[in-house]
Amino acid sequence: MADLGYAKRSGDRREGRRLRTMDARRSVMPYFMRKRSESLSTLADSVEVSSIERWLLEKRAEGWAGLGFIHLLIAAYVRTVSMRPAINRFVAARRVYARSEIEVILNVKRSSSSEAAETSVKVAFSPTDTVFDVYRRLSEAIDGVRADVIVSESERVASSLARLPRPLLRLVTAVLRIMDWFDWLPRSWLDESPFHGSLLVVDMGSLGTMPVEAAIPEFGDIPCAVSFGAKRKVLEPTEDGRCTERRYVDYRFTCDGRIADSYYYASALKCLKYFMKNPAHLELPPETIEDDIN
Image 1 (tube, rainbow, N blue to C red):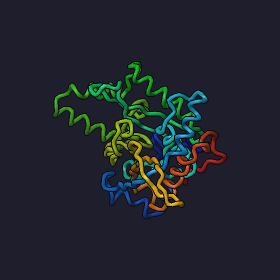
Image 2 (image 1 turned 180 degrees about the vertical axis):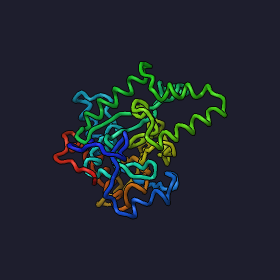
Image 3 (image 1 turned 90 degrees about the vertical axis):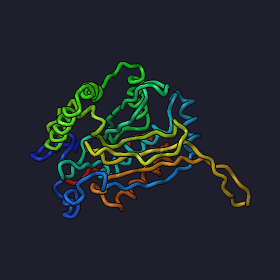
C-alpha cells in the first residue's frame, strides 16, 4: 500500500511513513494519551446476513469452497482502507504513521481440539485486492498453520523466551520494548509479529458465542480490532402485520482514537457495513484508491 513515488525520509519507520502535515491537536494527542488502552473506543453494530448468505452460497457453487463471513469481513475492511486510509495509521514513539501495507492478524487453532495449540497468522493485503484475493491468501496461511508446516518467527521467539527465568524474561521484554520504540526490531520479526499490524480479527462466531470487546496489546502498534459473533435469529414485523425471521451477525469494532477522529471512523464503518451488505462490489478491484496525507 506504499504511496507510489514516495521516498523514505528520516523519521519514517519500517512499517510506514511519518505523517508530517497532521493538524496540531492530533499530532500532540499521543503525548497526552500515551497508552493505547486509554485511547480505545468500541462500536457495537450488526449486519443482516440474508443477502450475504445467498451470495456465499452462489460463490461456493461456483467453486469457492469454504468462502465465509470472515473472508467477506476482511475484504470489506481492505476495501474500506482503500477509501478511508487513515484507519490504517498507527502510533509509535508518540508519533502517528501511515502504514505501508494492510496487515491482518487472526488467532487460529492448529486443530479443532480444545487442547490444540493456538497461534496467529498474519496476512498482508493490497488495497486493490478483491474478496477472492483475500480468500486465497487467508486460506493458504490458515491451511499452512493447521498442517503444522509453518512455525512463525514469533512462535520461535516465544518458545525461547518461555524458557528464561522470570527476572531475565522481564529484562528481555523491556529491551524489546525499547527496540520497538526506536524502530530497531528486525524487519523479519516485524513481518511475523502478532503485535504489529493493521487489524486484529477475533472470530467468536465459529465458537457459537457473541462477540467480545477485543483486547489490543499495549506492545506493538495495532490500532484496530474487530470481533464478530455467531448468527442470531430475530422475528421482525413486516408491512402487512406479519412477522418474518431475519438473521444477524453482531460485531464490535475497537479503534485507537489517536489516529483519526470520530467522524472519520463513523464514515469508515459505514463503508465497512455497506461492503458487507453488498459483497458483489468486492468481486472487482476498486476504481480509485485514496492516499493518506503526507
